[in-house]
Structure formats: C-alpha cells, structure tokens
Length: 304
Image 1: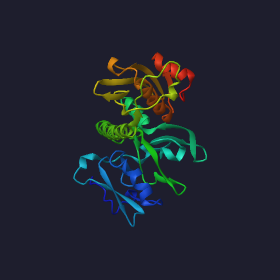
Image 2 (image 1 turned 30 degrees about the horizontal axis):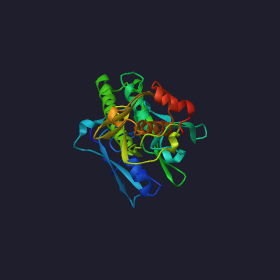
Image 3 (image 1 turned 30 degrees about the vertical axis):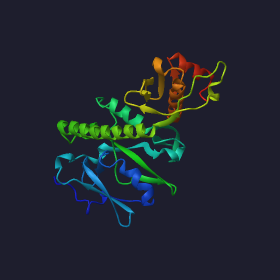
Image 4 (image 1 turned 90 degrees about the vertical axis):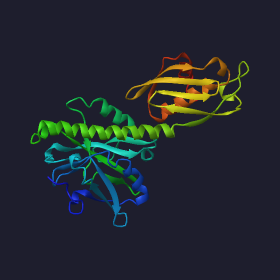
C-alpha cells in the first residue's frame, strides 16, 4: 500500500489555535519520535516531518515517501485507543520541563504529574512486556489549555486488537515505536542535563561554629549534573568532587559523597548537596540518603 498523501488525507492536517511561537517549540520536540496514526487509511507513520502552513494555523504531517518501510499498513482503527495521559509544559502546573499528567473526570488536569523523561524511561524499561504501553498520536491530540499553553494527548496501540496484522508486522511495529521513544528519551535526558548545569561557588573552610549558610564565597565553580552516571560533579585541576545517587521511578537515594584530599575544606561537598537536593525537589522526588553527610542535611531540612 502506498504512503498516504498529506495533501488529501485530512488525518494529517491539524488545525491549531495557539500562536506559532507558543506551539512550534513544543510540538517540534516530538517530531518523528511519537508515531502518527491515520485511521482513515489505517496507516502508522514512524518517519515523518511537520510543516506549519496556512499562516501558521495548521500543521501538516508529511510522511517520508522514500522510507515506505517506516510506514505500517492495515493497522486496524480498533487497535488504537485513547488514554487519559497528556504531555504538558511544566510551567502550566508550576514545574520544570515537560510533565506527564492524567486528565480528571472533568477533562482537566489531575493533581499528580511525572517528569516526562521519567515516564519515558519507565515505558522503555517495560518494552519486553506483552502489555507494554505503545503511545502514538492522532489528529486532535495537539490541544491547548486556555490561550497560552499547548498540550499533547496520547493514544496507544493495543497489539491484541491488531489481529488482522501478521505477528511479524505487529512485533516490527512495536520495535519501531520503542526505537522512536528511545530517541525522544535521549533528547529529553540531554536537555535535562543541559538545563541542570548550575553555577555554584567554592568557599574557604569555615571557622568552628560558623553556620553553613553564613560562609563567604570566593571562587566561581561549575557543578554539573550527569543523569546517565547518576551523579553531580565539580571538576577542578586538583580533581573531581562527586555526589552519587540511585534513581527509581519517583524516589532518589543519595548514596555517596566524595571529595579528594586536595579539595577538602573548600565547601565543595555542601555545594554538591545543595545542587542535588534542589534538583530532587524540582523533580518531586522522595529523598533518602545512604550517605551520612547528605542524611544530616535531610534531617535538619534541605533549606539550611
């Protein structure tokens, strides 16, 4: 079956109400990474581009005609089901980055949310499960809240309801969807790492009895968050100071703080902990500490 023509297939023409500057950056984060389904022709597109047209009031999905193997045919409409999940800009709910939320019974946003990168990691960790979530998008999924915020509703493919497809094609489609999710997750992780670079300062050793928040600053230093290594690190010519952690779905355990002898008494451990706790709070993570030094901070309150 030929790839559907976006000029005649209305499933691939999405009208938008938000101004281009409010919707462009948001929707382009998903281009070619969340597969698009067209119910009228029963095709799933894993390789496509998005084009703003009609004075930026419409988005046209353009499948790659030269990558016909990236289009799955005869995907029955009954296998594509709605979900209560939406991806929203964090600023809509007072949180950083993209957030995955669920609609409440009134169609609004529920109280709980999950950082989108964490939700993607969870989806990918379950890809071998027969009941794994296979998110896709269809016309109408790009929506808006009020006049300010775009959001993206998610559908899902249920393979058990795609019995008209061969098992080989169903499994190939599953692999293609997860391959695209892996790309999306990698980009979200890279963006998180970029945004998590914090400017902090080193300090001289405090005199006995001096409160931590009364220390005087001296030299500018960079504390970097490395999510793939699950650590915060300060690099100086004398060596690296490190705060390591273990991350689960919605909790973090700060497991180890290490400062080389040459870097001690300069306040680096404090700076690492402040950066780590600030990150954990921004992600709404439950915090524990196997590391005694971080545990002292948690016991007395992270704001100290």
